[in-house]
Amino acid sequence: MTEPATGAPDFGDAFRARFAELIAWRRDVRRFRPDPVPEEALRACLALACLSPSVGNSQPWRFVRVTDPERRAAVTASFRRCNDAAAAAYDDERAAAYRRLKLAGLREAPVHLAVFCDEATAAGHGLGRATMPEMLRYSAVTAVHTFWLAARAHGLGVGWVSILCPGEVAAALDVPEDWCLIAYLCVGSPAEEHADPELVRHGWQARQETGAMILER
Image (cartoon, rainbow, N blue to C red):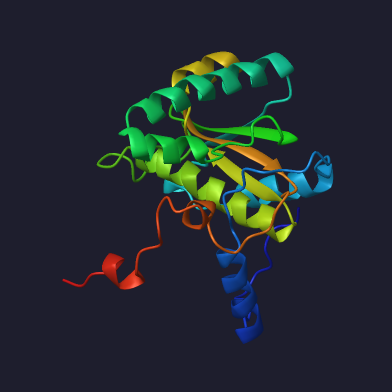
């Protein structure tokens, strides 16, 4: 991938409208078609993700592509255990609603990506982390979001699976001890296309008004 051109680009109204559409259509996808993900598209999305901002330019994200069936099975088993425990924590009515939701596409997604934060990285020389060390993890989150948008632009769907035990995933993938799990992503062609979030569509949680989340002091 080429580096961005020098000089400020001119983003016009048409681009801004398309960008707003991209943001609106960035959905958490749990239902995938079995079609293989084009390797060129996946690599392009990962390259864009690696252009994300990071504290001190530390670039702490580490993407692990999980292809081994046994490792995938271990992650899926962790999801099942955590999902059962999560359902049990709700009262009967809410637990029943929870169990009706499809919360992961681990079995269907052709691509699994585990995203870690390398908390021992020397890159960035500690700049910006002395008072907020969590900025390393936040930086890795920006890479996840960039990847998510890039995937949508390539017609791919991404599902972020958080109902997992991070320690179990790290052990299953045999990563360094200083790597912290940030996200486990399922990637593939969506089996369905919806502009509204699945949790809204199935009555779990409505969207809140933007005004309720923007304050002035």
